[in-house]
Image (cartoon, rainbow, N blue to C red):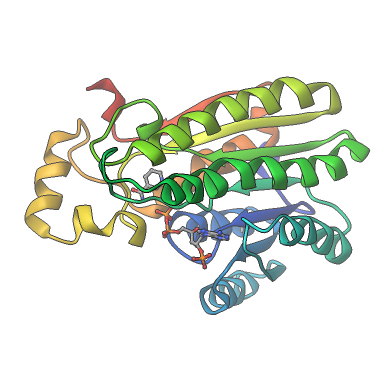
Length: 253
Ligand SMILES: NC(=O)c1ccc[n+]([C@@H]2O[C@H](COP(=O)([O-])OP(=O)(O)OC[C@H]3O[C@@H](n4cnc5c(N)ncnc54)[C@H](OP(=O)(O)O)[C@@H]3O)[C@@H](O)[C@H]2O)c1
């Protein structure tokens, strides 16, 4: 492996690492040599991913965490440092969404989306950045979406939360650059996970949506990992505050 992309000896946290895009990112980081802490609310899928990582010869740990609980967020950072001594990479991947028009969206629904997709990212990044500042080194990667750029029907709360996350990425990048911390984002297009199942579970609908994209199909979760691995690596050492869209060309339309 090109040494620039080798993550051996590093420790990563991936939120929502039990399934979908988070699982693919966790496995990709492990394949590049990092020890990976997977966090989420549901234990079983997290344990399964940790077992897959160990089978690849990397270290793994599960920390059951509800990211909307600030005490659990602090505990996730503390437990990682306790187990591995340091945090080099944080991937803020966990998110939630509701398909509701602006007229039908409830106030608590809006709050739940923002609490998970924005506030939790700020709280966890801050807890982790404190430990990175002490070493003057670290990288944070936030998972956003093409929906941060394009207004999708019924997705206002989600799209607004991810647009806020894009700005939070820039703010963290600017404030923490003097402390040796880089902060970037990866924005997937429509990807085959449980999150987006209503859009691809019907083969006709998937074909229709895929055919409209310049690259002619929706994405697989594994296709999101390489951009994250690049941003986490020495190869991206002069990049901060940016979003890489991995979207099959969706944003050209
Ligand atoms: N799939 C797509 O088409 C698509 C497109 C663009 C962007 N994205 C983005 O990609 C990321 C991953 O999405 P995905 O499609 O892989 O979704 P997914 O399969 O539904 O996974 C979402 C993950 O987030 C975790 N999560 C949600 N709320 C949480 C909370 N309060 N505390 C801890 N963990 C929580 C879930 O775990 P638990 O339920 O166990 O907590 C789950 O592991 C998200 O940021 C999403 O916005 C997805």
